Length: 189
Image: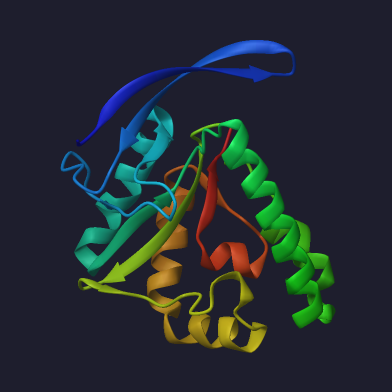
């Protein structure tokens, strides 16, 4: 399928705003980064501005053997999938709090839509180093804090390069450690 343009109307503060987005799938050869949508999706919606900035960030990382992998962008939801997502987030939040009661304050940062339901300016990324995927969150959002700290230590160079390249390109990376390891970022205004 490759890349495809769509025009989406976003309601912001009661005002309609038009946002042009790219629809990318695994075969999107027009990008310098890789695309690997998270289940259950088979493509990622990303704003033109986020695409431009992501391409710029990747341009500074290639010489270091680091490749960005776009996994999540805007998630257009029909009624069924919206209900399934809400239910999944609620169940996930309860389980997270049962397993990690000391991390109760993180639940909203981890289990809210975090902007993916608003625009294509909000994206999640993974990393490859010299073609090999980095296990930043081996157990997903249920990765224990000690394992997150270990992954941060083991992949410190690649993470620092990626976070710095994204910041230079005009993205802000989420402050929460789990979200930061998902490389959840948004286009800065």
